[in-house]
Length: 164
Image (cartoon, rainbow, N blue to C red; front, top):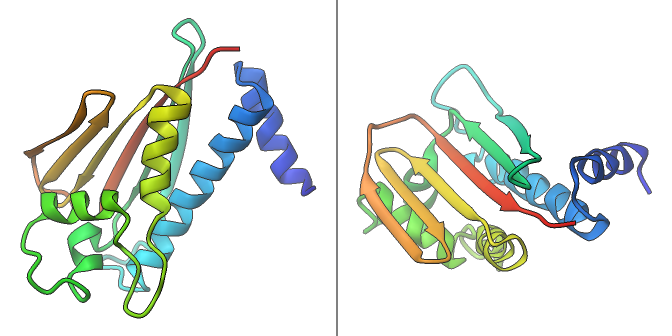
């Protein structure tokens, strides 16, 4: 196994996650990071290409917070070519959560759907997705949305509850 991957797994185990949970967290981060580059398709609206990824452990709450953000084209910009009738950010985020975000002629696009499922089912967690002026939260109570201040790109926050 890759030494760097092993280091990440050990780091999350040191936070208090078991090995399976630690591996799943590494997979979640990898999928989110790949999405930044796959869905921006090289169309960065600023001179900054890439993303930031940060994690914060809350050991007393047994909760891990992951945040990934990018200054890219956002959900709407990414999905507009496949869904030309799509007009607003909230609808684009909800479409992304449904697993229908592969590019034309691709059988892909389920990554965010799996992340949502893992977050809810494996960690009893929650997600917050802010893209454009859309803000969508996903937790055990369902999916809720609202209009928020407009941002460039996307920010996704995931809260993962763990028990060792």
